[in-house]
Image (cartoon, rainbow, N blue to C red):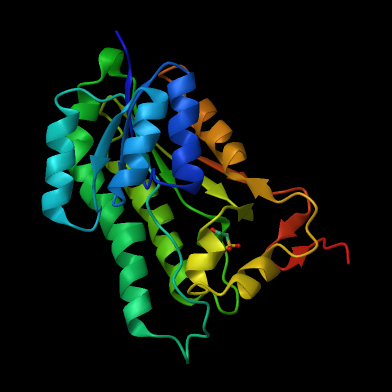
Length: 248
Ligand code: 8X3
């Protein structure tokens, strides 16, 4: 029987790469994101199903669950992002709200809606992989609402794992460090390409979306008794957010 996977935020970056990787591994992938054209093209490319979905909108999430149906093997809660890099003192509370909405509330809504289908997965092998961040492990100046939201992603993951301990579903988190994608830094700096490029300046080999997709694919294809609680990955050049090797 073909295994089914849902990837949110599948229109670009880690989400799109994960959808491709899971499809190549044999999954039928429901590619969910707000941008219909992008998920339609991706689903056509990988033989999956496109679902226009805004994870922060309850009606949209209900519609996603209806398309997915009664059985789901893998849920990758990838939709998320950073808006702004201001200090706490100078930050815009609306940015904080948006980040909490997408990185935490959206993830919770999708999980709630799809949990019954995950519990009905074949052989009790259902698995959730939440895409967190190394920003969910430490604090850094200008991290503001993003580090707070990603700590939220991490804590939701842990809480779910405790609460679902006797259920046939696994709960995991992948926490990447510096990943160069087309949109992450650009979105964070509100379209300022120069500031976005500075994030990766001099770093010979930041992670790319495919590296994270590879990690996620490995996590969700372990035998059903194996729960990779959390997997932290960074480029070799990034020992920590504060210690990045840049060749100038
Ligand atoms: C992104 C990692 O270092 O930009 O999730 O906070 S960082």
